[in-house]
Image (cartoon, rainbow, N blue to C red; front, side):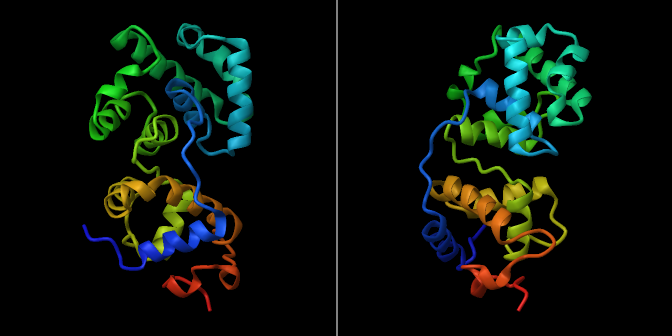
Length: 218
């Protein structure tokens, strides 16, 4: 799939506006997996608090895998919808233990990106976005997550069909964004989506890429 001609210019403008971030691992893979599950339908701040509370209660992920769902849910209540999240966390960690005898996920380093993505999305409650977060933010792989900001902005930029699903958007955007730009594009689009390209009232007049955006409100 050919990348739109505007894409390199947009990447450059966003890099200039927000600086081009350098990759630094956020968490080790199992921590990133749990954090990303916790971050579903809430803020990173709430997810971080829940992760801290959970690891204070259970210092080792093997302990979480063996803990009752009710106890996990109590520890992560600050993340919201804690009951299903606790089942996903326990189920994913238990599956890692059963299949690999541990949860450090070192085996991912021996897989290519597609194999690693396929493995992760077979874990309970892990969709393609969560799997991509583990691969990008923990391992530095060029697999870009498509969160709500990336999804919204890329539709406004006409990089995605109007009826594209989140999973379809993942494959489309990962095909057109160059590997070396995926990390910075994701980070800067999220920042821009939060500050300027808001869901309800986009601040198009303040947007550095307004002239390149078909969805801009003039």
